[in-house]
Amino acid sequence: MKVAVLYSGGKDSNYALYLVMKQGLNIKYLLSIKSKRPDSYMFHIPCIDLTRQLADCIGIPLIQSHVSGIKEQEVDELKKIISKLEIDGIVSGSIASQYQKSRIEKICNELNLKSITPLWQRDPEKLLKEMIDLEFEIMIVGVAAHGLDKNWLGRVLDEKNFEELKKLGKSHGIHLSGEGGEYETIVLDGPIFKKKIEIENYDILWHYSSGYIVVKEYKLTDKKNL
Image 1 (cartoon, rainbow, N blue to C red):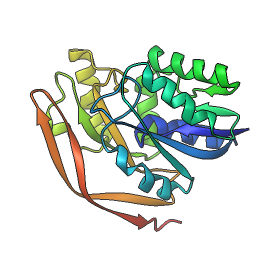
Image 2: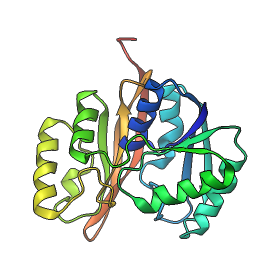
Image 3: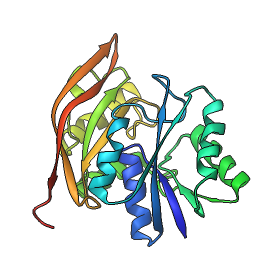
Image 4: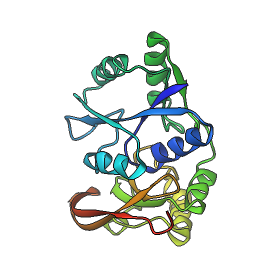
């Protein structure tokens, strides 16, 4: 089966990609969607411009497209983009967002494609633990929830940060996968990466109680164990 993976560069799209690669699916494309607005109901925003570099690290062709970011209209725009691809299915990293999952399924039904959601309804704590144990290098690049302050930006999720995040989840109602937009991530390295990306310099844009990272300098490096 030939598939395209909706790819933001974040932890969920990378882990969904990892799982379908393990299943032996033919990953024809990574599909990166950038909103023309500073927010989107469907798509990841922070560090989305790095998806081409991440695709290079993984070694899978990337298709980059833009949508308006206008609610529902961006779904129709996504359908037009997908309709031009010679594929049999779409892979997405949805975990609990019925909004996103239902709209991707609608697109797939209308185009006679299969919607593949390997993370759907998985326990968020177990999912995040699996990613950390598999040595996905997950950096937090956006926060928008009480309890997640500016100091979380730029952190790489390790065992210590994971435990802190679990405590915040209980005290502030934060979804551990960030499925409610509480935080956004980028993956810098992992078991599917042939190269890794190193962030050397970034700015933090902060407004009231939320903010995100703008990467200024980075480099791609070969992995010594390959």
